[in-house]
Length: 345
Image (cartoon, rainbow, N blue to C red; front, side):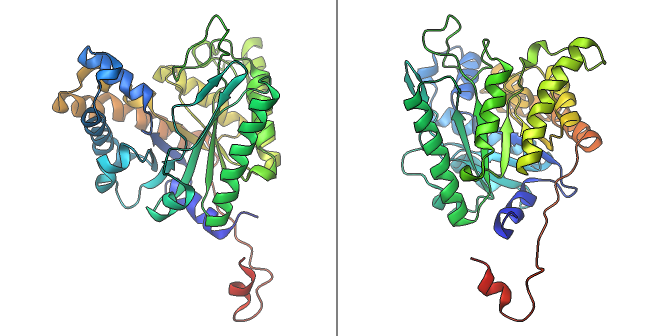
């Protein structure tokens, strides 16, 4: 049974009906790249002020239509915590985007001077970690990633705050398709995604909500039309859904930068397999930033136009097809005054 603190935190992430319709704006390299493209400069020339301005615009335009938002502490919190509506949940990133690349795989770590305790103290409703993971990485890399995810889970238990775990497959350094960009791995295989989910669904990691990538390349998913190809794709999604159901872990999908129509297709497969919603970023706001920044009026107009339309379409799809999340509380053992206080460890 999930603790009351974690259950209450998860309800804060969903809308009033229990649907997770969440917007991610903790992105750092992808947003830097979008700003650089818009300004026709090198990514290294993007300034702290640029990042603050862009993230503030995203919150200003989208926060009222999101059930919760994903902030990072280095840019999004100082940029726009004052704009976040009281009803909109706050998920806060823990992991450093500058991962360690080794021949045997990637190693994650936390942002310097940042912790689960600090996320709780700033009023976060949940902690999010992105863990790069491949079951075929070297033993040393796998051990490192498991230990990192497990340690964060222990801290989330200690502070009674929900743990949102994002898993991403990545190309090895010697792969022909190697990139350090936050894009869907072109050599991703379904079994890599599925076995990653299976590993971290184990209770020892303490995951409360999964943020998952599609098991098959999102850009090439067949239409969910009952064809043989669609049935095969649905099986991969259903395998993920079964793992999460057996573990009692709700899950949502990340957009991974795919086009809006492609992401709606991803979500059709996901909802059929039991997903509870989405935690999407670039598919909602990327075009507005990379086409118009730093013209704030144009960025806002684009976000309040196409950006909001995309978010609202995804929200409507979630409300139609997703099973809502509902927290469950067990007070069967509470018989007299003081029982609950004594029992809640």
